[in-house]
Amino acid sequence: MSPSPIRIKTISEFHNLRGLPKPKHPLISVINFEDMATNSVIGKQSLIFDFYMISVKRDMNHKYRYGQQDYDFDEGVLFCMAPHQLLTIIREEDAKNPTGWSLLIHPDFFWNTAMASAIKKYEFFDYSVNEALFLSEDEEIKIQQICDNIIQEYQTNIDKFSQNIIISQLETLLNYSDRFYQRQFLTRHKANHLFLERLEILFKDYFEGNNSKEQGLPNVQLLSEKFNMSQYYMRSLLKSLTGQTTQQYIHEKIIEKAKEKLSVTELSVSEIAYALGFEHSQSFSKLFKAKTNISPWEYRKSFS
Figure (cartoon, rainbow, N blue to C red):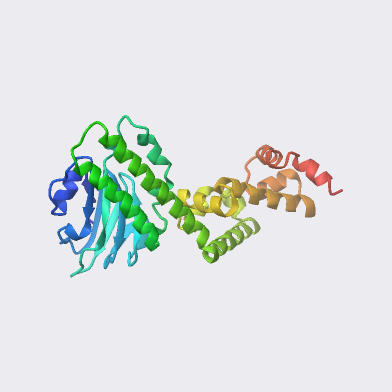
């Protein structure tokens, strides 16, 4: 039986756990991995942090498991975690610390600021089962420069301007990260093409088999589980490839199949609705009209 996860509530606790000096600021800190005491735990260790972590990691000789995905971090990788998410470290004997750094920010740092809610719009914090972001050399330099600005600000004398300046720098860092994530989507043409091909096959098999009758309409959760991606990541990927959200993409595939059945079969509208996975034909007709501006019956009539 695996031991219970260790919950780390404060940045000071994290510093203490990793043998680091007391943080300069209780709610924000940048740590260098080379300064940390070597983790003595061999095997699996699970951690839950009550603060945000933005990390650039290199030279990992042990695995991280975040959600359902393993990472080796042999290259420079940007890795973001929101509070209360589970991180599992699988460490072999004689493993050394990685290189790189982590920016730790407690949510209380954002209290009474716009960033308290704005940070939640950055979907890469919610990628519990996605790929991390591989950085180019220039991208890593840009991220490092912004991080250095944050360090310089919180290590100087704190005054009434410090919080706003740091939050401004952090927003810049997050916006660049968002840009780099979108770049990653767009530059992986072959992988993205294969992803869309696999989606087409999934929908074809789903509707041609008995899945739709037995399990109902395909949904976002189904696709997320089939492709081992979080719903947030899949939404971002499909948006970059097709301009549609996952739900919009599913609806498009349902309407495509409905048009096919209406035009080449003699099944009634109710029978088609049931075959597609609808519980009620009225729901099918409502969706069809919302997407095409005509009813299923009117669409069929246009072929007669």
